[in-house]
Length: 260
Picture 1 (tube, rainbow, N blue to C red):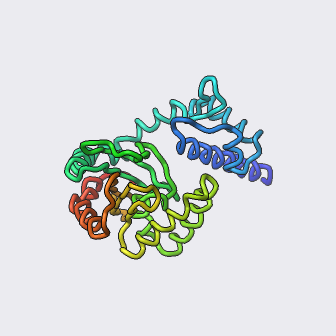
Picture 2 (cartoon, rainbow, N blue to C red):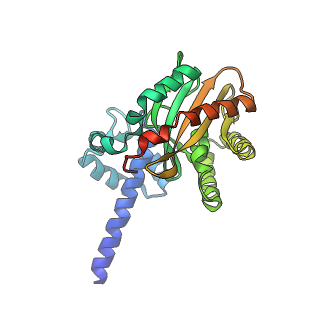
Picture 3 (cartoon, rainbow, N blue to C red):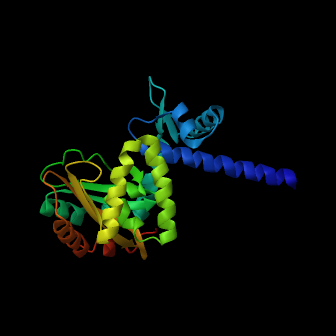
């Protein structure tokens, strides 16, 4: 019995480690990760990471970029996503109203969903022009506290969970670029004060954004819609007015029958 229990424990550990690697690979969908960087971020032995990547590559869940040492998600990840899309693709369900909002408000509209302590971009629609400096595209993952869209979902969580996410996100941000966290802290403080997820150039000069949470499939705060634009700074009153327009779109009503 002990041997069987140990084997199951080892299998579960390997599965969780593999899923962790896939999550990391999803954060750099274009350039990918080097094995050494994956080992450092996961605190795993490089040999262990190599074995897990090799197994995932055999199943086409991971791909090694030709003529490089970088790994990305593989074709099976895409194929599996296609099969799940009818039940989870919020971006498809809300495509028309999101595009209309982008044209009306003359900015970029993002639809995001919470994935653990991260937010994932499910859809992006640009207004008349694509805003300079707006780097997030479909599939992009960010720490939940790192963008207005993520903060909109974060603000719906219990206080204890908010604190836990903030601590974990700070560790991730500081590992990537410690100079970025003060801007995130300003954004969090402003959002707490206003009771509204807003970024008034706090993290990237010249870029403002505001977001509101959405109730999806009966779950409040599972998703969020955000508006971002580059150029002239917004006032707090302007951000509040834009948030009201996003709320009025009532996008959550379109998502009631999804399986989240």
